[in-house]
Image (cartoon, rainbow, N blue to C red; front, side, top):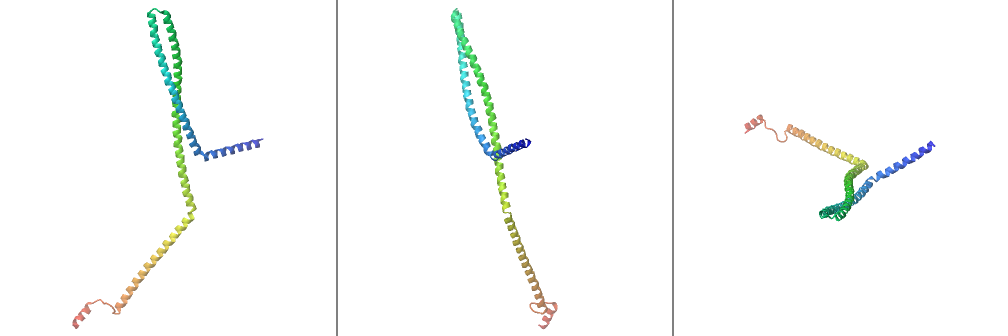
Length: 226
């Protein structure tokens, strides 16, 4: 029995993990759709708010009209009393009572509209804040996702081309070594040429071949002979 319970728990855990994996894989798409749905509901809420506000305005007009009627009929009742017409004054008073009852009903309706409007406005503001925050979070997630994908792509390409790049660097090193070898050979050749040229000039001078430097003795001997 315990084993069966553990198996059922494992199955439920696996199903939960699979469900979470599916949700995580489509999280951006899900959030985008939720934002779209929230905006549609918000728009419906705004329409409902305008309808309730219109009803409130109508109720206020009705209240104003009833109050005007009450004020007028109070004047009529006073005028009837001044003329000692108690019967007419009583009839007018009954009409005023009807108006006051209607006024009380309309004021209760107005109070309900006013409270409902305040609630709707508060809910709309909260919905707007929530949507704005979700859009900000979505933008951050999408931006981060794009940057991470780009980074992974570069990393993958570098890893894939690592051997090629290493071969290229090795080839450059070989080229640089060959160039240095040639430079060393050229320098050695120039040094050897200079050394050989100096030895030859010294041997020729010692043998009296080529231009000779004039000494004081040779100059005096030349002058004697002249």
